[in-house]
Length: 56
Image (cartoon, rainbow, N blue to C red; front, side, top):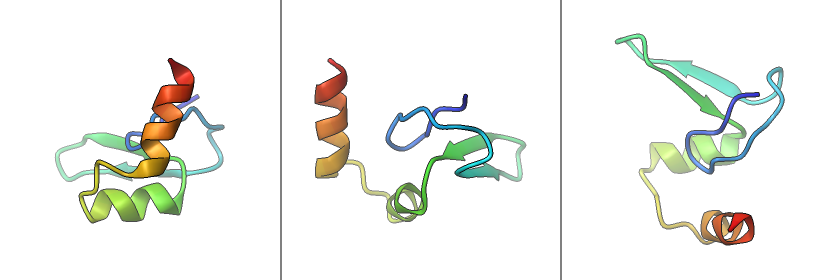
């Protein structure tokens, strides 16, 4: 199971998106919400910090 590079959530492989860079680096994203926020270079988003607190 890949882990989302933006929010850290585990998800099933057929779902989500796999981005491959020109240098061969692979980035896994679980949803379009994560993809759009990553493109805007947002890191302090309220819904991500809630998920991280729940895991701890």
